[in-house]
Image (cartoon, rainbow, N blue to C red; front, top):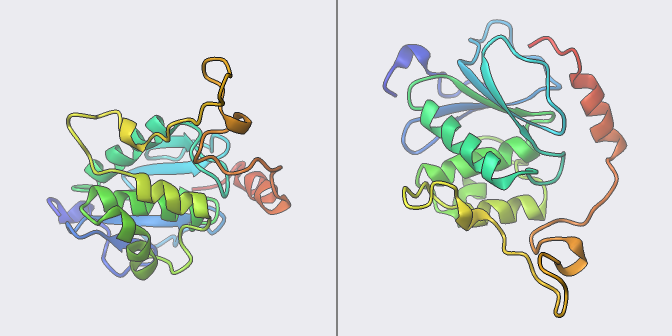
Length: 203
């Protein structure tokens, strides 16, 4: 780390150490943080709805529970920014439970840090939470995630190509979904309770 005064401590709850030495804290927002722990310098929050603004610099990515980010390019830009900031400051990544979306994001940061994409989920489960990255489409998202490429800053390689129906108009896809999209389903009662619990949260 370039500035240890701004680093997390390896071995602290939720702190993932990447191969480069970057330390990033993952957290579930349903559980209050340890009041004795240092606060983040920057937070990336992966939630269905915009959370209350924390007292530190932060960014929100719309990411429904158990699913994938609503805007893949925005999510990639946010993940790259978090990885870069983690070189010299305390970065926190969090969702409601701290496992599915947060684990997926941490696995993507591991890819940016040099872990092969097909090993990143195992890496995060071994060093962060054994139940991280909860769904098949989250695992697929990590496998398709690519390291930072100066020739492709938008991360277009991460975007699944839509499957066009024969004879359909421009932009039509099979079933109205892209190839990597999970089946639509209504929000679960658990995720709805989690969203309600985040309103008015004291960071």
